[in-house]
Length: 214
Image (cartoon, rainbow, N blue to C red; front, side, top):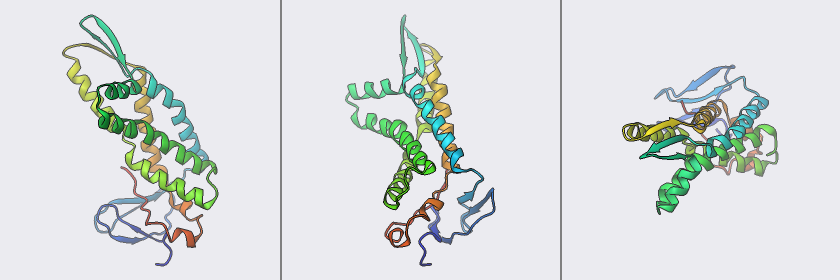
């Protein structure tokens, strides 16, 4: 019980559970509420790097390419993610614009950067490793591209009746980026990286729960 890496907390019911090494492609669930806790995957750091690099290549198209094309009252226009955020700022919707910027742009990008730094070995020293792991833990909870895409689709259904709407290439890139981020959230296990931090320093850190999104 003295090793902070041997005990985890169920994110659903707060049950303390001893972490054990699993066979490949096996998953651990909470014995009380059956919440998924962690798994052991055959993915190597090089494969995680490949996924993050793919995400970096998708970022320009997802953020700057038009998501939709509109023709309303004879006027053609298009909208992309960054332009939408700037329009919200222009309309003085500061809180909404900042929330969209954080959840749809900064957090997904930070998640890719953090996992890339860990998988590539850029964060080797224990203090940098701990900082990166904590940053990834924050980003993984705030990266909500799926919420933005669902909101966009709801708006599209409302616009179809009053305007001519066509989908842009940016929407496809954004959807691929969302799926890639979700894949990284499932496959990335921070436990092996926490084990590299000296015990005397790791014991000062709060409990780190390797919760995974479904």
